[in-house]
Image (cartoon, rainbow, N blue to C red; front, side):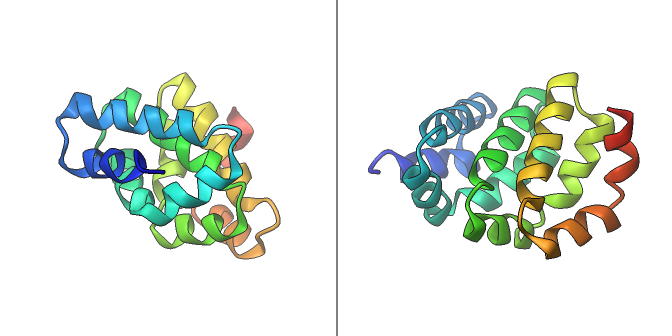
Length: 135
């Protein structure tokens, strides 16, 4: 858990390369570890990851969508991710992202919607259904 705060800090203060590496590292640390998903999110990772969805490089957008999708399997994280404004940029990635980003954004939206009626409504109202059908 000691590695999480410096990695989260890099998401906001690091160089372009450092931001991407931090996002990829957080994704790796969250994968398959329910506790890490919660701790990393509580460390403040969600807002800078949402920022990367809109201002990052193509690879950073992929990593951010992947991490957020991984975090979203937790119901508290679903709420936090939606409140941080992740749904509109994830929907945007469905049409403007790389092929990988489109798939990761779709998976993240699915995770955000699973068991969360409020997120389902926001995702639909944000226009996700037509680009999801296109995938």
